[in-house]
Image 1 (cartoon, rainbow, N blue to C red):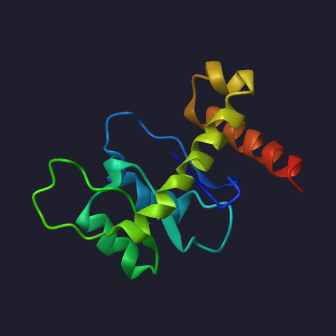
Image 2 (image 1 turned 90 degrees about the horizontal axis):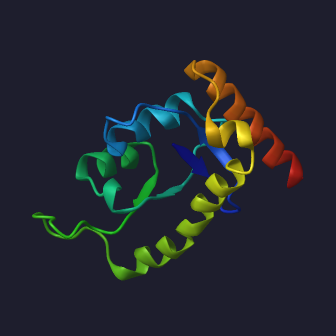
Length: 133
């Protein structure tokens, strides 16, 4: 999981198991995995992040969650089209993952221990940040 700024540079990164849902991992990522002290004003996520509980938790921290509603949503819509225009910028998040995949050690995951793998991801993020200084 990763959180990036408006330029596609990493703010927070961490690795998790594939079994928990992404909605449950956003708050721990913001609390434990941040590379900066400041938290973002807005988060843009895909349809998996459509959760009223997550919206409420992020709203308490002063963070606005922008994600399109799932097609099977039973509750009334909470976002309109004006806010969802920012969703077009989600490609910047995917660009960070493409940049990280250029490092072979991260792409193939030779490391068996998760701490070592996370260290290589942090090293890759550091190299990405240094390129854009």
